[in-house]
Image (cartoon, rainbow, N blue to C red; front, side, top):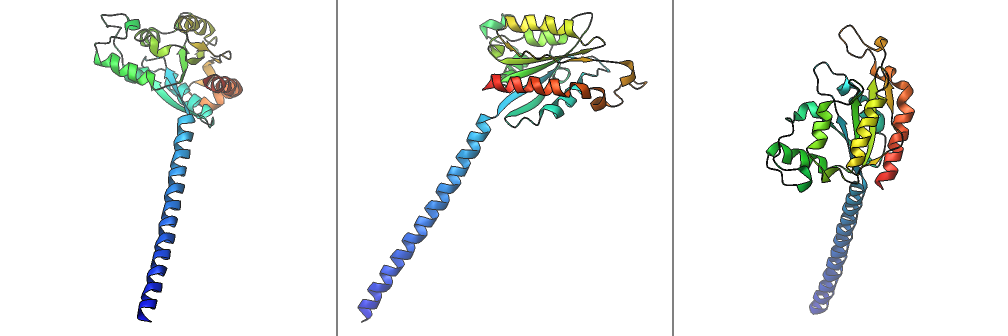
Length: 227
């Protein structure tokens, strides 16, 4: 009798142990599957840099850049990041070799290259200075070459006439770098009434409310191009 009970108890223990192991395997599989799903979702998100081209003191480009970031951040498949050239503070191009050779010697160039490589596409935000775009933006672009190739780009310009001449000049340079220029090019027109006596926006969202649709349209085109 004791032998029979011991044998039966042993079998029951084996069965419960198997059930426990199977349940743990099922939990582990579910967690692994969930982690893979999260990784797939994250990998499907495209990274886009909003490059603020103005570096001068008392600029308004940073305010416009933050407004653009707020407007475009609703795009569920794109992760936007502001890249501020004033913070990067790149010196005038000082590499001994040409960028196409990809043989950088300066740490600031290597860091800039690594930053730009992170992104799948770009939004270039440029003011218009004397019918052109600023030297700070041209300098930042000229530091690199292959990092820009074949990537989509939106050009957003601003100025008292909308900055379309600056956008046109910038477009020619980006095309020379084999970039894919998005058709919609928001040109934000400035008015004196937008600013306080200190030269800051009174209400940046109100100032550019009429441009929300074209910003979103350009972002939609960018998202399609990034697929």
